[in-house]
Amino acid sequence: MMQHRTVKTMMNGTQKQYLTKEEKRHQLNRLKEAIDAEQLLEALGFHISMRGRNEIRAACILHGGKNKSSFRMNRNTKNWVCFSAQCHETIGYDVISLVMHVLELSFREAVKYLESISGVNIYDEKAYVEFKRNKDRTDFINRSKDNRQVPSALVTEQYLKSFKKFRSDFFEKRGFDKELLDEFEIGGGYVDKYGLQRDVIPIKDVNGILVGYSCRDITGKAEYDYKYLLTKGFKKDAVLYNLHRAKNESRTIIVVEGFKSVWRLQQAGYKNAVCCMGSRVTQGQQNLLYGNAHEVVLLLDGDEAGVKGTGRAIKDMKGKIKLVPIIFPYEDKDPADIDIEELKQIIGGYNG
Image (cartoon, rainbow, N blue to C red; front, side, top):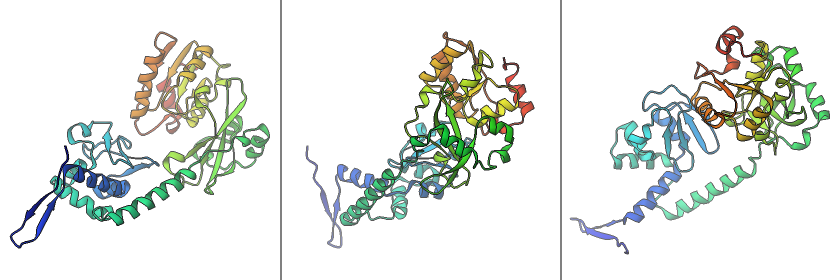
């Protein structure tokens, strides 16, 4: 059924035009699109911990949370969730509801507030069309240059030999000695397309064949999501970092999330550690464990993602291999961040 605008005659003779529900919804969608999510969250008092291309993460100030990534807002829709206390379930995941709650405003006041910081007149069709055109152009450019992966042509033993000559002292300053970095063949000297210098971590498959690199920004200037760059076309599902060495040390394999955690465990005497390069042990990685281990010790990070990853791995691998899950006791650290003696106490005698 077609909706029609209604017109009310005011006392001074002027007429005020009312919008249909559909037109109001369209204007609110325009408003949400025009809002800069990062600017809004900072104005509301959030301390942003991660700035991704599609998502922003922070600690949730709604319940006073300490997990730095529990609050997440989508840059495009401006919808948000709180993974720690599920604040969105009581407040509403819409950005207007968020502003209403944080600033204690009515719906109309929250809309006015968002209008004031949107930077575009959502009621002026020409202004909005120009804003949309510029936004689409910017998004296209960003997508075009977002190939932030290392060229696969560099994945050869010859290139790796060259990279080894240019390793910086970045990892040495973080407690990893030269001999250990030599053992793991860490290199350096790679400069990405944005001019950021990176150290090179070679990744080998279960047979010891070089299949990719992870390149770590050593300048401190890379965005949170791009501190590490993987090789273009690299299939993480088919590889467990360091498995080609760990499988020869023990039939008990310790699984951690990151490269540095593998190195720290080796410093502590655990040469049987591998990393899944994330908080999830994928199906392909699980199959590698079934074929190369009798027992798996899960030592994922203690943050929310790590705990969820542990639970998922237990569910997936239950009954298929002996599992020993260990919940890491710190939310804001990983095994690479703690000293060797404490690490030994957490892991115990699972070094084969």
